[in-house]
Image 1 (cartoon, rainbow, N blue to C red):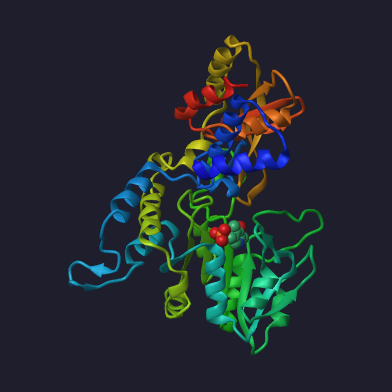
Image 2 (cartoon, rainbow, N blue to C red):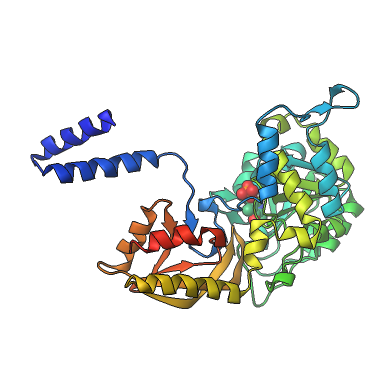
Amino acid sequence: MKAQATALLDDLRAAGRVPDGETIVGALCGRLAHEAREGLVPVLNGSGIVLHTNLGRAPLAPEALAAMNAIAGGYSNLEYDLEAGARGSRYARVSTLLRTVSGAEDALVVNNCAAAVLLILDTYARGREVIVARNQLIEIGGGFRLPDVLARSGATLVEVGATNKVYLRDVERALTAQTALLLRSHPSNYRIEGFTADIDPAELAALGKRVGVPTVEDLGTGALVDLAAYGLPHERTVREAVADGIDLVAFSGDKLLGGPQAGIIVGRAAPIARLRANPLLRALRVDKATLAALGATLQLSLRDEDRVRIPFYAMIGTPLETLRSRALALATKLGALGIDVRVDPAIGYVGGGSLPLAELPSIALAVRPRAGDANALAARYRAGTPPLIARSEGDRVAVDLRTIPPERDGELFDLLALT
Ligand SMILES: *Cc1c(COP(=O)(O)O)cnc(C)c1O
């Protein structure tokens, strides 16, 4: 506080201005509030993007938080076999759950899906060739570009086919004695449409088996259930990839699974054992809090009636009518304060690089600023406590209610009341 006050006075002196006391106190409060924000703070996500990578992707279920709390606050049997009274496996418990949800023989968990892909490439492909169809050379957010990742892993990328059409025979022709992997990546954040042909993953897996080259799928999104049940387009599930015979399937813990940041690899027992023996795993391993949260989230994924406890599924499953009645209640109260607010239809997205074209019909409060423009109002909301992230649209700011938990409506009202 003293340091901030001194810095402010220095700045004012340097600027050669002497404002009144009230202005100085106001400026000091602003600086202190800014300083208090330097750490992580919770925000209200009014963007309508359910898995917003910049906002921390998937919020965790209460059960996952409770599990983290119980495990991270003390000692646990993380790597301890209680029966034998000796060292045990860090991954044993979560692997059992992952086998159940995926149908795979074995499973492994690392820090994120990018790390999972790195571990697989490092284990199999250093100094060797990896065949990838040209329509799958993806870049995901944060500069993770498949050709670059392959290069960093010391693997040689062998691209086959054309951008719009790739056939199994293209892969067959590219096989050499140096082929280490057949890599498939799930185009989770783009679509190629029109005059196209793609390789059936089951046929790719069969080819791999025939020639003795492991197949890998960078699935990314990691849907455990068919999203068609939520009115969304079908997204390839982990179980489907495993059932197609892909040897190793990698996906994120904090996308469609709705759990903590993690990279999950499921697949056949022998290749998973080989990954487990790679010393790099030690550098990519997850901590006890992540494993606790992941285990609890997977447990909730087992049954339809429990899955709704996972915030991602609660949010995508909220009926439009529920959103509309929340919006109407808030709008009535805000209107009584003389605020110009409309209840508008809105379009949200799953986000996190998943289902980029799938729109989530939603409801937004569209607030018109009393003074200034919509951008300035959106900035004022971001400066609130908690900060509210909302979009300016024309002369209004739209706050999508699908991504704001209903129990936060009181806080949302207090923020919007300051319009
Ligand atoms: C999101 C994604 C990744 C990266 O996942 P992280 O868990 O963020 O590292 C990798 N591949 C695909 C296909 C993805 O969609």
